[in-house]
Length: 183
Image 1: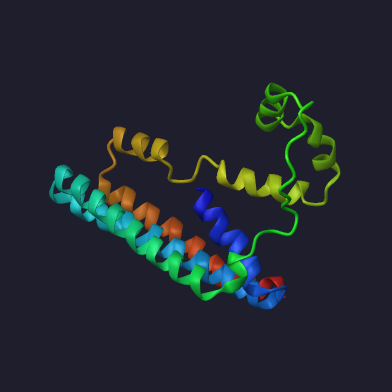
Image 2 (image 1 turned 30 degrees about the vertical axis):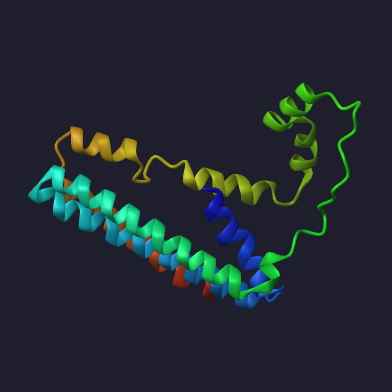
């Protein structure tokens, strides 16, 4: 998850260097790649699961191992080819911590940063970030729980795969529509 946030959010900002139009294009392309993988992966696994569940498990393991290797090779190539990614953030300082600072209090503040809630409540990003969070909390997303439920009530892996494919196809279409609608 942290890797996705760093690459899809932080790196894109650095690589596009303030060019909003280019950033929109890059974000749409990354989303398309992500959705295409979400489209083809479950479809392939559901077809294999029709033959054998054990074969589907081993296929999924193999696909995950191969995809992790490919992902890290690609990330390393991008990191090496864009010098701006190797710079440390300007806000980072190497000052030693204040000895009067209580360690348990900083741990608690890191876990529950309640003091920053008023700032967040007034920030213009509040509503968009809540909308995005709610988007990912929808019961209609094909998470593990939803898939387990569908399989338990009698849907076959093929039915689930086709439904996931249709859902992802709609999301994929949105990556082409959104940049045009934003303009």
